[in-house]
Image: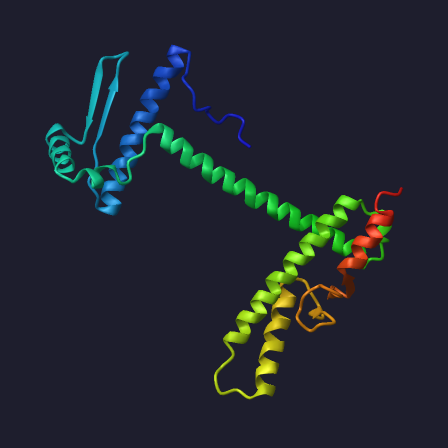
Length: 226
């Protein structure tokens, strides 16, 4: 992170504040000029600096007057359609940041669950895991199973028409195998009722047979032991 990044707050030092105003005013006008040329749009800027009693009008007063009149002739709904005040802008930014945080948390959680899976694959006993981690892991597996089942059902609905039962089965099997590889799952879903659910059995992930009920039972019996 750049520690020299300017904080968005009022600059108390007068000299620094005036220097910042001059520099950013030039930058703003330059960027706006580039925008109007590159994108063929109309724009204007009015900047009032109370400390200097200065009024900056860009590109010119006649152009500003013309664009203002054009704007005021629009219906009110069009005038306010994409208008943002500072509060609305900050609210929008906060929502975007919250969404980014949510995605980052989800990614970190998935990485943690995959790490647990690799440890199980390497032979670490379930009794050495924390019960809370095992519960999270089971919920993660159930979620993945449900996602895969939904995608398999979707593929079943999109099997080419006219295909025989054997061809349909092969098509679904190949598509399911592709999904499994993408999800780091090998062997597909293993369920005694052939529905793909985890009611009585489980499934095979990366060479490990996972039985959800057994996993929870083992975890509850010894997950917090040292």
